[in-house]
Image (cartoon, rainbow, N blue to C red; front, side, top):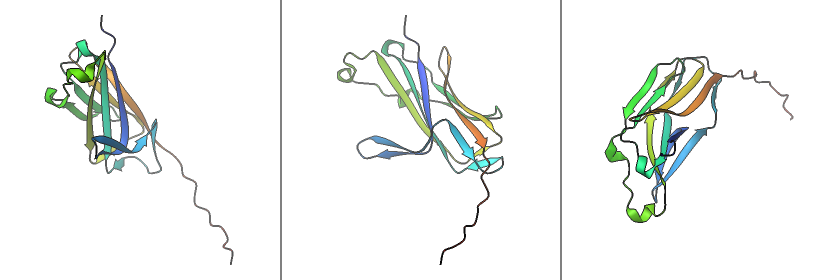
Length: 151
């Protein structure tokens, strides 16, 4: 019996491809996105990278990504084409037992209608996996205080 498949994601402001086939994540959100502006809030850009980890012998034949807004409405539904997932040469697999499939995308602009949880789901040919959640909420910012200047 294969090991369970696992999905993860990173939410950030931007994803950049660097020299040497490196990827840089700019402005990574850890567990929340806090705003001091009233909802709805418009983000100029939201970037997401997802990973699906599976046994080599149990590689998903279908990957569909769904991003849900805090109000439950779909922000994105996209199928990852099979051609975009890498085929690893035998010498790279060696004694590996798992394969990692990844996909990155940027959404421009993103309107967050209310507080709540932004969710990323991955649907395969047999299951639905939650890749991640981001808590979106408003925070109160203290009023700026003026300090007496020293002359």
